[in-house]
Length: 432
Image (cartoon, rainbow, N blue to C red):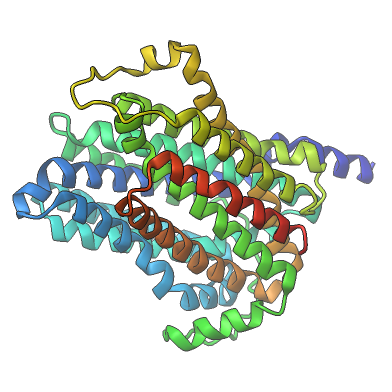
């Protein structure tokens, strides 16, 4: 009977959504990811269409600066986030962080009301900080609540929910903020979502603190170096961490180019760029969900190289079908309905979906490896280091794409560079 239950848990991941040991965490994570992207999207739109001009600053520079402000806390607070996740009951820690989100989002509502760019940038930094503290607790609590045979299913659901939250949060924030009374509506929604996240966190089951006597260090450089020095000897864990960061680099590269790619290469309006975001998010979600069926609950990187090769091949195909002359500035702009009705654009849609689907297959087993192959007392440190590595790789993606474009490299050619490099990453993962 016990074996039958384990088998069912390994194959029917949706059963976890009816378990208290998973559902409250899933909902808390979903609401938090939604709010992060809802607020960021609203702020980016406000900067682009209003605050940048009012401040007399280039909105393009401000948007990139805002992205950096959000990422910075992942570098700064990684050591203390690790210490807190090990010292306290992680369910309690998440409740404290979610309560802090209510306060922070109340500040966001005030910032929107005051129409203050710098106040809102400070709030954005605090949102990044609460995400930096939440992430180690979120991923390290999973192996405390789920047996190993359920970790693939649990991580798959978390990734699916996260990308669905990113999609809906990004679209909602951009649509609502610029409408009449949008600043009030945006502030109210952000505070309400934060409150809902705190409420759902109240139902996360308690866990035993890993190291209750841990001394919390507020230093930055030395503890960070120490965390990495402890992880590097764990070949499979460190390799999985770097492989995950590579995926974030690839994903950030594609997502950042969608608006310009849609307008300048395809001659389409913003509805097509938004559709690409939806396709990409749904693809990653479905790929993440498919992992459990393919691996049957077994934690292994067996198919990760194949997923990397799939990303590489689809990236090359996307370059091939996108290799078109630049659109004339005088050419009529077409919408999503007309774009997707043309047969020649089917391969673009297919390639984007294939890249994302393979990405879901790629990333979920790597998270499970980090959670199971690292000693229990090191898992939160591994996740904290992974956050630093992810942020660094995403920063490299932004800078690298900017340099390539300045050197005359086209956007489809940037997509092409993701092919051979990801193929090499797949070969290296196969050696872990």
